[in-house]
Image 1 (cartoon, one colour):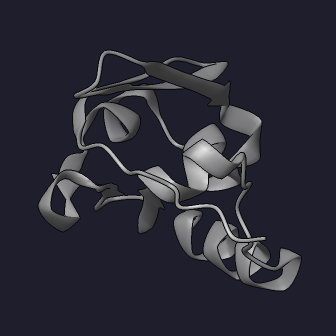
Image 2: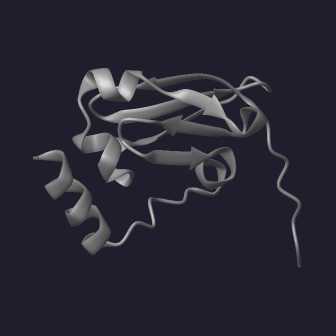
Length: 96
């Protein structure tokens, strides 16, 4: 059985030390642990605050963190799929 997932555009994003919260145009707010997205968790408050709503409103991009998160993944409860090796390389580059 297939279900159709209706996606709504992002209207606002807030990132704290613990939570990523995304407001959608239908009035819902999705809140997930920031730990689901290690690059956000390791980013500075300034880096986390500098985001762009992208993909015609269906995604969020953090340029300094090279992180992209889509509405569909948030609605489905998907965590980052970045491999540990890739994340380690990213961390090493940040320390340079």
